[in-house]
Length: 312
Image (cartoon, rainbow, N blue to C red; front, side):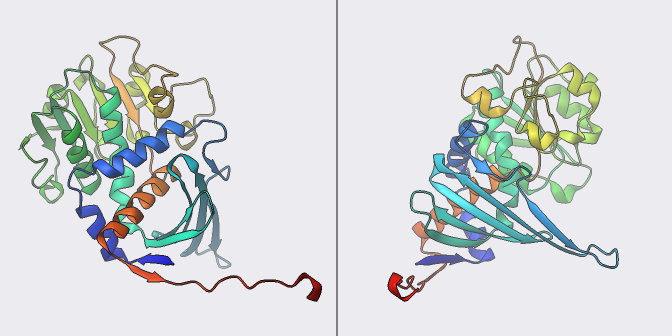
């Protein structure tokens, strides 16, 4: 039986856990294996892409991303046309297909949960204030997941667009808006930065011991990158070829590298969009939730015919 889960049902799975604890746990397991030889397998560039443009127009764009993630018991094939995609999930041990999801609602989890994972492991022990520059669903998910695992007392947000505010914020945590991004940055123990917010961040606003976690590390200025202790979600996705360069989050989780040289270091966690291990981990989590909640439709597959070798 293959479970087919529609886009609206995937969205129901995302809403089923306001703190995203289950998804964060699966993602952490995947990140602990990320970069370990023999643990996670994919193609060199993760995606194989094909653009149909005989007349120079690239409106038609197909891509495919295969990946084995044995630490979470899963293999996957994510297939898309431009920004619309499905993900097919396989049991790693037997390579039997388990489910197919219309996975667009998982996008904010893929972008936001790495920030919460970074906060869990890279923030100073005394962190109590969480600041946000920018907004959107991914940042809201990062805040909710972080407030569930750290003793956050206040969330402060700046965004020029009130439509991207964090709505209700995190349950039981004070949430207020600031008038400038500088006010947020100077007062935050942990600072989350959305893709559009990174361009406004100034190195002079940061304080000793702070964790800055960016959804897209490429939006952070070179000045901040040079002054901070940088931890990448993936050096490959950030275009860093030196394997002895700044550590990856997985290396820190495994205790192989340190995020800080000293307690006063500003640590910058530079995440990147479209890291395949985030796609597979959140997809496998969503499949399990859909099973538990009775969502989706089970479709039986015809068995493979038995082959009579004598007839070949």
